[in-house]
Amino acid sequence: MAKEIPQTEKHIFQKFDDDLSNLVNKLLEMGGLVEKQLSDATTALIEMDTELALAVIANEEQVDDFDIEIDKLCVRLIAMRQPTASDLRLVLGVGKSVQDLERIGDEADKIAKLTISIAEESNSPSSIGRAKIRYISQYVADKLRQVLDAYGRLDADLSLTIVRREKIVDEEQKSAIRELVTYMMEDPRSISAVLSVMWALRSLERVADHVENMAEHLIYTVKGVDVRHATLKEVKKQFRDS
Amino acid sequence: MAKEIPQTEKHIFQKFDDDLSNLVNKLLEMGGLVEKQLSDATTALIEMDTELALAVIANEEQVDDFDIEIDKLCVRLIAMRQPTASDLRLVLGVGKSVQDLERIGDEADKIAKLTISIAEESNSPSSIGRAKIRYISQYVADKLRQVLDAYGRLDADLSLTIVRREKIVDEEQKSAIRELVTYMMEDPRSISAVLSVMWALRSLERVADHVENMAEHLIYTVKGVDVRHATLKEVKKQFRDS
Image 1 (cartoon, rainbow over the protein chains, first blue to last red):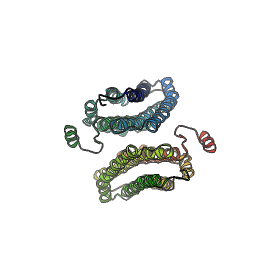
Image 2 (cartoon, rainbow over the protein chains, first blue to last red):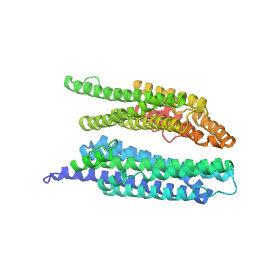
Image 3 (tube, rainbow over the protein chains, first blue to last red):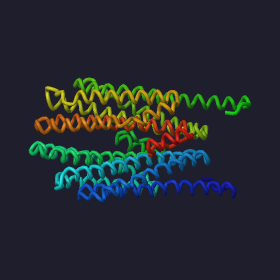
Image 4 (cartoon, each protein chain N blue to C red):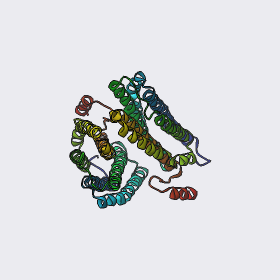
């Protein structure tokens, strides 16, 4: 912003910055809720806690409410204040990240529903794949925390470390699935139970994808550089040049 | 638009409408490509045509290019023309639908990669689940066609029929998965092959979700009513009232 802005204009700018902060804060608030949903859902699955799973399903509506509220806020901000350049990118980036958060909430909901159906099928919850789920869900939760931190500080560098997630989730997934297939072959009666674990792992993989999307939206917001379909090498180059 | 617009202003409006048509046309163009990708990917899987699968993977980049191009178009349109009301909603709705199309492209890519890995694993492609995949993929492809038609005509009523997809995909999915589990139990050596079919079915389910999202974005664009998290009954009511 220029140095010598007349008092009235300054006031308008100030208001706009408030609106933008408010928008980001809403996103972070929604992020906090989604984080809790995801963590509760995986805890429910690991500990076969159906009560907790039901709570996750019940809270899904709150996530949806945030989704609609923030979306409206974005539309109003654009229509009323007609932002340009990085301000506009911020509003649009938040709009997209809201979609990703909402879908992370959906995955939490799916994991919670899985928990309920596993509990209904068998009295004795099996421990198959629990360690893997615990490990991968912890990893994914950390990444979600990081991307929300990055939004709080509009920190593109932190976002870049999230985009380069070094394929850890994918590798862990593959090894988990190989292990689970062996398990099913050795004990075909376990197939249904093992499939549930696989669905949960898939959900966590989707969550990791959405977290990555959010990081990409933030890089675009801050740097004006679209890294979504670039290779890691290209991303680094664009980053240096921007 | 008001009746008595001075000539110069009319000219600006005209230009804006051209830009909006151009934007929607780009979306439809991208939609056509994604439709082909999805149809090729499922054909490749059903007929175990690895060459076709490789073509799908190679074309993925084109989908990504559209994604970036349309996104830029949206940002430029907002920054330069500062649309409001339904025009702004259209731009934002297209921006969101592009994300959904891009992810449908991702699912096509996943199905193509599955085809390659199935082909690598066994010389004799099995016919397990092929009929189900054929049926569900046809259904999903029809819905995708419909939602693109709806965008071409900005037709909210057609979109509403897509949102109410009567849970057909979900029911078919469940029955397919039950069948596949039985298959695995009877012949544990088939587990890996059957899992691939399950992943493909899951991908098609995701495609159906994205098509639904697109229909919801269009309803919001045309009617200004957010139906994303409403029940069917609420949607109908909002529709009548809008």
